Image (cartoon, rainbow, N blue to C red; front, side):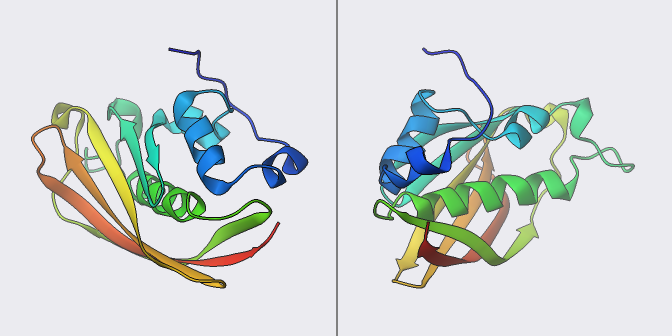
Length: 156
C-alpha cells in the first residue's frame, strides 16, 4: 500500500479529474488527503460512485471533558464521508461544498470502542444540490451516529 501523504490537490489538477477519480485517488493514496485528516487521525478507505467510507481508531486525543469522543470529531467524519460521496458523482470541473448537515449521536464513542467507520451514501444529486446520508458504526456494526447533508454543486 502506498504511503499516505497530506496536503491539498492543486485546483487545476482537480478540475481535470472526475469527482470519482478524485475520491478514488484519496482512497488509493495516490492523492494527498486533507490535513485535518492527519490532525484527527482518519483515513478514506473506500470510494465508489455515490459511496465513501472513512476509518478512524478513537484515542485519548479525541476525548471531551466527559471522557467520550468529542461530538465534533463524529461530525467531521460524517461531513467528510457524506460530502465526498457527493463529490464522487460529479463530472470534471464540478465541485461541491456543504450547505448544512445534521447529525444524531446514538451511542458514546470511547477509545475502548475500537475502530469505527463512517459511511456516506448519496441520496440524490442534481445540477445544483446534492443530498447524502451517513452512518458511523463500530466493528460489530452497531450504529454510533448518523446524519444527513445538503451540498451546493457548482463549477470549479
